[in-house]
Amino acid sequence: MKLSILDLSPISSNQTAHEALNESMKLAQAGEMMGYSRYWTAEHHDLPGLACPAPEVLLSYIGANTSTIRIGSGALLLPHYKPFKIAELFNMLAVLFPGRVDLGIGRAPGGSAEVTNALSDNFLKNVGKMPELVRDLLHFLDNDFTEEHLHTKITASPFPEIPPAPWMLGTSEKSALLAAENGVTYTFGQFMSDQDGAAIIKSYKENFKPRKKGDRPRVIVTVSALCAETPEKAEEIALSSLIWEVQKDKGEGQLGVPSMETAKQTELNQKEKESLYKRKQKMIIGDPKDVKQKLIEWEKHYQADEMMINTITYNPKDRLHSYELIADHFIS
Image 1 (tube, one colour):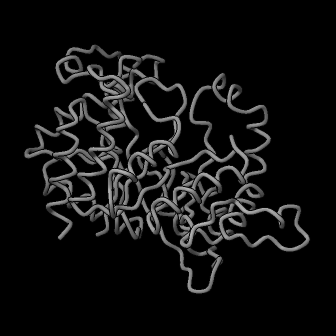
Image 2 (cartoon, one colour; image 1 turned 120 degrees about the vertical axis):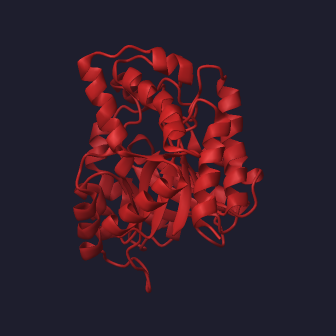
């Protein structure tokens, strides 16, 4: 099984943003040594406890401190930007780090309504124009606009020998069909979706139209997972991130991921307990045997080509150890 890393650059309650971003770099380095295929980082704006609003900036830091692991955005939120600018940014990354760059795109706002308005005057309009934005972005990446097109005389320089690999990220059939229509690879975010992912992926594969000769539909499924030596230890470590997610739902969580001690002492009402239980059901939590079995089950259920793992812990050492335990049981 091919395994990859999705990093949200979480900030723990005892960390600064600088420390959290440095831990992201250490995670990418460790993931490379462990044999993970990719390291992707996400775009979030003014969200409590998350340190990365600009994947392209963090990826330049990650790329400079690694050698072989693929690096990419999971996701770059296209409706906020012009396709030409995104192509320039990721072409430059692909020039700096040849053959290693993935450009994962999505259409979520990545923050509050107030943040969305601060970033873009036309976000909702651009969401409606997403098919057009995606087509233009792909043409810029391929440098193949027709002679009749407005953009035929410009190039998203510097143009790399190996272009960034485009991916569409989503949690709905709409995103899957957009990926299929444009012949790009697809990532389904199981960890943040209540949709029937297997049906969505099936629809993607059935409607896939190759963008280039030899292209085939390929799928990554992203899951939340936490692995420790025992199921009990894994449950204890996972509680911090679960409590933090519940706090964020209430508009709290500004202090970042709480310690295990704080998480254990946090009182929840019935609605919050139900939310925590629901989130926990979407996670893989256990010892290496349990986690391996569940990953294999989900890989088969979704017919995925690759599984991408998102792990959030209070202590960065617990996060690294979780990825290490999983790699030891999967990656030779």
